[in-house]
Image 1: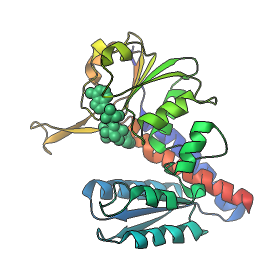
Image 2: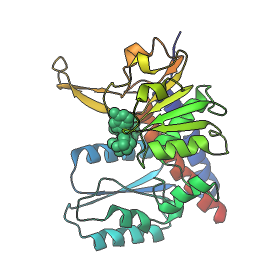
Image 3: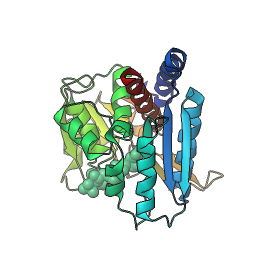
Image 4: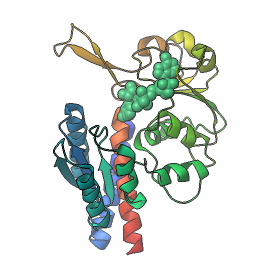
Length: 296
Ligand code: NDP
């Protein structure tokens, strides 16, 4: 029978471990981990994600500070807010919700975050350390969630051929880097495919583990997956569905019903990678607070 890799269940398991670590920090040294989430503008999807992050943080006893700035906030002002958070001892993790309005240089803002508080893992120092394996870093939440799902469901990627479909800076590239690294959760042979890969199916069929992050609804069918493969679907897409009251449904990049008949294990959408992303962000925040506690 096909194993369903539930990100929801794995996420709950990790959150209860995190809660114990948060309790220990408070009881041993009176330290409360602090996460600052900066939102510029009123993008509804961003507002929803930020609300979810806040609620999840508070549920674990993590202090969550939301800073909502108007859409026309000048870049300098945002950089000043980030500087303030860098210097704030109550804050251990800083997240600037992307995308930012067009008049703000995203790279400049990300580079302004202190790498020691870069719980999103997008600062070039974090990215560089992930690539070189030197020094401590925060792994970006979504790809870290993918690795954690594999490990906790009994599919250690070590020695396996992993095909990652997608090469974005937030999912595909860091997922490939984590899976490739000489460290737990890594040691895989990794192939990265993208929109210029001529025969995608020929590549995906060679995967022991297939990680799909394309943003193309239900485009990986059973004919593109090897018998017995492990499939992690990162895709989160809204497609019109008149049969639903809200007029749409959420689906992945993989044709779940079809592929689950062929795969040994598969993650669903929703309930797969989605819940893991916030959990790994909170995990990075707790790790940052523990480092601060150890440094006194
Ligand atoms: P991007 O659009 O930034 O990247 C998509 C990648 O897929 C690109 O590298 C692109 O190639 C590749 N691609 C697109 N079409 C094809 C194709 N036909 N064949 C092969 N490769 C293709 O998306 P993201 O990486 O940001 O996100 C990917 C998916 O993951 C989305 O559905 C997103 O919603 C979801 N997501 C889910 C998260 C979660 O928490 N569950 C978090 C983040 C993302 P090229 O580079 O050549 O353009």
